[in-house]
Length: 398
Image (cartoon, helix red, strand yellow):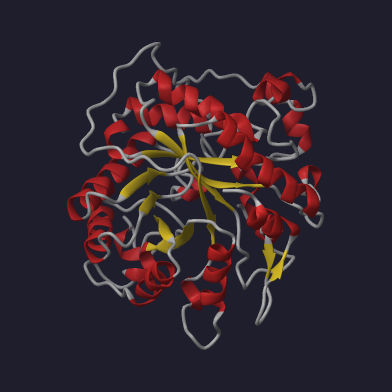
């Protein structure tokens, strides 16, 4: 979930939401509007390069932050891995920065921390999903620039990194999520979001991973659900997905990644309801907006694949003005998360796969971090505080 500077990722000021119904879908050269990308009425499936995986429907995961806490001296990494296992969840999601493994030069890797994380998860019977992004400076077109997250100068460089990881951990890393929210300019090197460029990156990584570990699952990046109508900031998520299909991206991922915040709404609220609400006028302000993305997949002949929700949750943030307008209570968060899993189990089989909630709290977050308010635990040493959502998900039948 976003930091305060990441507001435009998903959440817009209330006044802007009122104007959403007036936003047009059109685009002409020279404007900042996102292009209209409409799926064909019927498309035949793209050839599958490898057999498609089939996860339990649903499967249960959550993101944790073990990277800087793998040392045995503080026990935080092992504690948080235990928390995932003790919830009865089967997947642990961990962000892995390309620059943190290959910081100095091409082909030089330090696997120390990832070795520990792979061992932690395997020792606990957990499957590991790694999110790969955050390029090293040497891979950029201009190594002197400070770019938080952006594509390399050549997708083949990322492919080499993906292949080296898959070759080191065959059968031990269960799934790879390729990048994060490339429909946002700030996640794409502050450039216009580019579905064609993202597909090139996805293809390079997919082919390299499958060559080294054919059984590994490749998940496309989850997009930020947004209607910010300025390509210098963001492309609408559904238009980006359609752009991926138009660019021939279907053969290069096993499962489509989707992000599914609940906003202020209960999980059963339909996109039709929020679209009809004069104060919202937007379909994406619901957990069930995932169903719209599913329809887009089917329209593009990709209905035999599953969806993985790689981020889902509700915030209880009453601190930051930019977020408090759609905050829920901790008790509501607990109730909504359980009901979201239950709704998917009742209505989205067999096409829903992994559903990864956010977060086991990063031990370094405080109340000043807006991500802190999405978490289902609070930092603590030696024990973390378990919020109502953690306890409810732990008790939830799986």
